[in-house]
Amino acid sequence: MADSAPVVGRLRRDPLLLGFAGWGALAAILFFALDGHTAWQVRVFWAFQPPMDLFLAFCSWRVARLATGAIRRFWLVMVSVGVLFTVGDTVQTVLSFTPGAWTTTGGAVQTVCFGIGLTAVVAAMLAHPHPTRTGRERLGFWLDSATVLAAGGVVAWCLLATPAGYSRPQLLAVIAATGVSITAAFAAIKMILSGNAPMHKAAAVPMVLSAVVMSIGLVLAPGSAVAVPAVVYLVRFLPTLLINCGPRIQLFLASRDRTTAFSQRRRKPYSLLPYGAMVVAFGALIAVLPGGVNTRLWGVVAGLVLICALVAARQLVAFQDNTALIDQLREHEIRLRQQAHFDGLTGLANRTHFHEQVARALESPAGGVSVLLVDLDGFKTVNDTMGHAAGDTLLMAVADRLRGAIRTGDVVARLGGDEFAVLLSSCPAGEATQTAERILAALTVPEQIDGVPVRAAASIGVAAATPGTDVGLLLRQADLAMYAAKRQGKGTWLRHAPDMSHAVR
Image 1 (cartoon, helix red, strand yellow):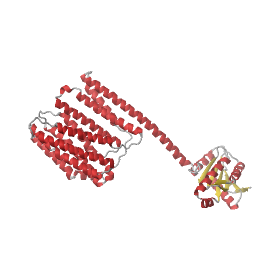
Image 2: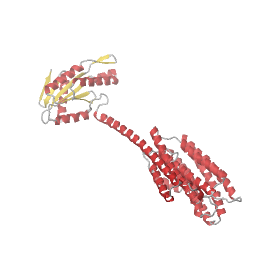
Image 3: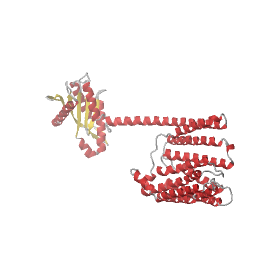
Image 4: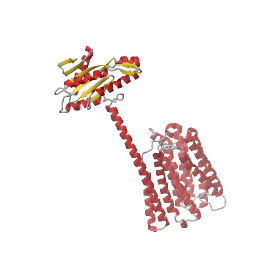
């Protein structure tokens, strides 16, 4: 976005985002003010959730109204997620004021609503159209995704392989934390790698961060009824604020420019995330090694082997992509060279390539360089009376006649329009004249175009190089000879130097 700085400034002054920040600040004040009163901290934690859930549903609904197609479907799913979160958190708020040892870990209703909502988001991401068209690109995307998810699985195994260290509520909380971590990783890989996320990058970042912060909060203190520091409550509440910022930012951007807000981003040809997953897996291996050979270690090793296999498979896909790309580049190079050196209609050398060939021939010690300029007479009449398609057919026929009348190694070119040229290397002036006469004879045979015999009359100028002749001089001499032939109305002209010319009968 060209005016990104002004947009950021307006976002900072957005009343709703400022309201979210104020709501979070108020919650933080209460968490610290009620430090030591666990029951009331928990009640504040849950009571502050439903209003934010409602804003999530409302902002998502507003965004859905501005979007179309698959993007609209995604945001409608987000509306339903906001509604589910509202129901679950409202029920949990009511329960927190009833007798019982309530914590920041939700009860049955809240957990079910949260799980359904989270599953709906993942399903919506899976169903969102992928922008790539080739099978290899899709395979590479899923391999990258699987690599990151495998790394999340390794981290989860490190936490869950020692269940004896947790009470049952704590274990459930850790499972939730690792599940959120893996889901967040998948969401990130989907948005970053596909280039087709249903939201702007500025809106996606806080939503992904919300899942990461949620995981951190659950791991810090997994749902214990024992008093925890006020900062833990704040960390656990921050995801609610972050997840609401995403739809609000998307709505802000879409209200001003829908094209930019929902535009497809160009997918990067590579990603460093799989290598980051390998680093995470190796880090987990180093962390569990001091515990000796046990179930946790074998699980990490198995995960690391899987990640390495996925990365290796991704490299094979990349090699195939690179090979295909190299082949395409070679074909493109050949086409460019063809376009740069040859005429598109006749396949003959073009003016630039012909000049290069003449210059190279003049530098050769063999000598005996001659140039023929062939200009068709009456070609405009053919175009005017029979059409440009017939004219093109005649030009291609003339090109074939010229090829057939010269020696192997000589160069035929189309200089433009109905003007052709022939480069004769190691050819005495007499032989050059004979070649010109051979060409004239070949052109006397009519060409059948749409059943009509058309003869390509031509005037030919011949110039033979003398010591010190350069490309420009040689072509000018041939041009003068050709126009002399046109004025005479017959014959081919040979011009050795500016002061010597005579007609060849």
